[in-house]
Length: 360
Image (cartoon, rainbow, N blue to C red; front, side):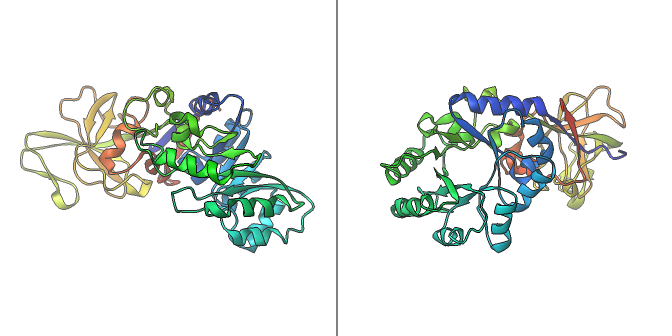
């Protein structure tokens, strides 16, 4: 590997974070959410690392499930968005997947199931997010139709929260109340809690939790949180200095000359850019670490390179390590500088960023 743009991923941290999710409701189960290539961490590797712990996995779509099956993952896999067409429907049967049901039309499709194998249907109720889900007033009818099908061996009721990361927002309790009212009288397994619900809302804990973001070490909450603070950061994004130059006061750096030196400045060029999935909206001042010393990005992010301020740093030379986020400079801290949130930073990384795994 000549170009040093790389993501170093600690699989022990991901195992720790899954176990933390389980500890919130130790007698219950948890899906390991590995959609979007495990939030950019590499779904096949992450799924294998969690194999001994995970009760089941969750992905967004059939294509992601097939990748796991082709890499030897034989545990249950839930399609969080369900199936979209006949090809998807066939894959649910062939790959022995669990599927979310969020629309009455999908129930009609399931009536035509021709496979002798059974599956679990996760019936999604729209409790207030208004993105996907059966209206609450149709929950009982949908449940009755699904549970009467001989090829559905269990119906699990689920919903999704809109504001669970805002611990002072009453919307989550309203959604919990709406969901519980919709399924009142049913003896059924439930799933409400995403990462924020798992860590922050005991009322949301049920038979199945769905930790996603938290598996990778990013807290869903702004600021300190007693459980969010126990998460271990899984990814460090790194590269190296490939050029160093001195510029005088008044000289500009990068496309458009958006940053001007106010004093004599040592500029380092780093092999990392938006071609690697590094967000172009990272502004001048965004913190980075060079040889373990905190400094900042200066100038615009370009496709292949970023410039950083090396003035007054010790021991820096071509080849010095640059870290954009990791255990010391966390995603939670840096993501506001990108006008973003932690999971967009990791999921946007392209295949050009080499993944290195610790504790395989």
